[in-house]
Image (cartoon, rainbow, N blue to C red):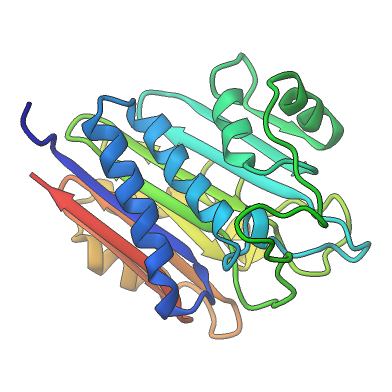
Length: 266
């Protein structure tokens, strides 16, 4: 069996340290390996994001920021160019929120939130976790406010997928939901490409960032030119970064430090 065409990009969030790109590289390799083993692209991307959730150095999964009440709530979403989308918002108590989001995409629903999302995850027997029982070496939840949403995008020559996961804004009010689970804000995937953003969620939502970025892809601009233009939409006070993949290639960038990795195979 020959090597399958694939382009994968993963990021550790705006504000993540660039020398933590070993974690994003691992996520990319997990996705790449899964696709080569005939795993579906959407599931392969969810596996990559789960690696980032388990890492502990990024604001997702075991590295998530706590809310003002000391609890942790997760948002996660996944979308493909075949019309599938699933998301969870303000969900507590589970190791890999991306798996819950992926499962939502297989139902008639698009977003589940709060206690309803948690019940959905419990019914699926997804692995729970608590603040005092963090997987991945016992790392505590992050208290640094400088790191943000993790993500992954991929293209297999036929389909595109984008996925995100986050613990949200450090010290936020319980129930706050950012850009991640909102179609066209934090992520978007269509027949011409996939986009995954990271940074100040409120600013990203107000600019409908992911869909507007996708429109630039449709107009035929080069991947790096698109990244540079979109970063310019944000002020220096708003942390922002993104990754994208198109039929012309892939790119990533941020107005902060950002761990990210990519791999392409024709």
